Length: 367
Ligand SMILES: *Cc1c(COP(=O)(O)O)cnc(C)c1O
Image: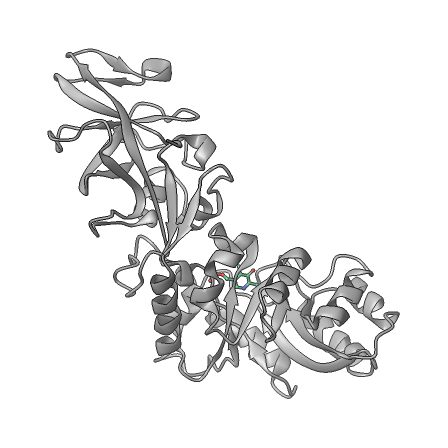
């Protein structure tokens, strides 16, 4: 028997979450963001669930090629554009739309030989200060692109730094609207948090032609802990499940694992689970451990997570034994939910990082 850990991708949940996004932004076209191998889920594995999107957005040319091999003929957007001149040849060949965020990319485009002009998303740095033209340089970049024979159409893109809280999107939206007000072209503004928190209601000025949901599609909340995935009506697209491979009975004062960081305050049973940081689980956790489900019952990890194993408190699940199912995140096979956002928070990180970190060695099934 193989090691019992397994991830399951839920195709119906992906479809549901895409529909949920469309409810929030009924007039927008949807780029399903599938960068980082579909946030760790696997590009080929999510394709069926997300093919109802209007396009796919990602960073990696190889992943774009995979999408074409899967038979996707619709739009594909490179969110960071090209990294070197010859990437443009692949853009021409595969019909990729690409972001232009700096002058070096315009230089490459200007010397690119192509029969098919490209669809460009010109990126404004409206305050995130990562990628994009500064407001003072944006219009010059637009004018440069506008006269290139290599360019078919220019759309306008920016990215929000605080859509999930903090100062919100208003300051950046106002910069974007000011700089682009008289420029024609489609707009692409909103990530998951902006879609859920700022569309479909009060901020009507957020007119967005192309929205860019990522993490919501996979069923995690972009603004946990303010809102849970359930608050937003999302369903987990991945479950990570394993089994108990050994149990131990601890006497008062016994310790568990490397560094003996956990000491039993009373006599108790613990389960040893086939999951460790080499599977992508977090090694660090809050002193009270991370939440897990054993046979669908909520309990928590005790002691340090090691490379291949972790240990969990079986006190709330007296009938648990070797072979009992352990859900690390997602849903148990009986349907009990354990949100990835809660697990991540207990390890001092976010659901995004946890799902992207799923290790290569974990077998994945699609259902
Ligand atoms: C990753 C990414 C997104 C999606 O972000 P989520 O928070 O996962 O919705 C949108 N736009 C750009 C430019 C990105 O890099």
